[in-house]
Length: 380
Image (cartoon, rainbow, N blue to C red; front, top):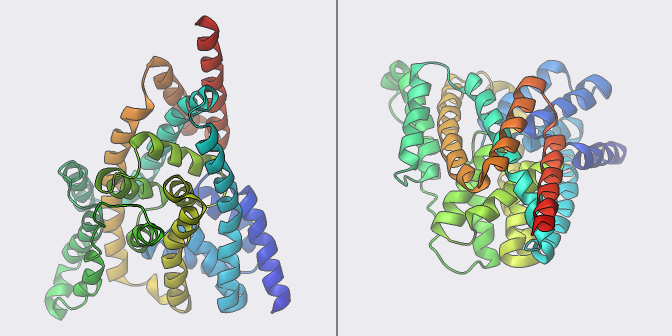
């Protein structure tokens, strides 16, 4: 067992330091490492793990890592895999957070982020298009996504939209079954909707933990949906961040390896220093560990559930509507002039047409921003 835990730690630490490119890239890397090269899990078993990760809230690639760890060394393997996958990104983001606080207002840092932000919006748009092809499975899911897009601007609670959309689509797709068995099964998810938003106030460690724990407990739709929930809580309701700082958090999450959820580390540091970063990271990832531990022994059965599958269809469609709404809002802060629009447009074309790795585009956008800032300083 000790040998297996050492192997798990070594493999996931390497992934934690090198897994750039977002959840889809992480899953591809895990497939190559654990299915093809190490043969820790089989092809069908890995597909079942992906299906289970999509059926529960939280960061999909991290949950896949947890399932692989469980398959290799049970509970100890699950914890080892998760900690070793998350820790490198957390350390890197902490260092970048310190630099942001120290130098974020310096002209060079402003120029760097000026070039990165349009690329981040292009990356989210590309993810939106890719998810849309899979999430919109007919008129019902298309209507659910469109309704959420509209309701977002009427300030309807985002968690209610996600879970409500999932439950409505599940009920309509299974209306004959629902009529036969009653409403008992649909009600099992109702307690989650009761997770109320925090009231405005000071950003204490306990409040940070609860805010991120809530998001980690109910967030479907992949890492990009995270930013819709973050804006709703931290910008709109609590007032702890500005839209500019949220876009910067997105950029930090994109430019670093490992889970996109480590944007929580950056936000926690901005609001509450090292302690804030620590409790925020623990808060947002803890639900994934708990849910993965509960689900790991039952992965095979979850994939076959018509109820879970239709609920997921509804949640994915509503998540798409949320992503579209928040991308519009963040885009207003990311495109202040024609050069920024050009950077974003070029990045989008390179992503969609030529499949360029997002990390290189972010670095390129940052270099263009630095160059533009240098030329502007020379001109003045």
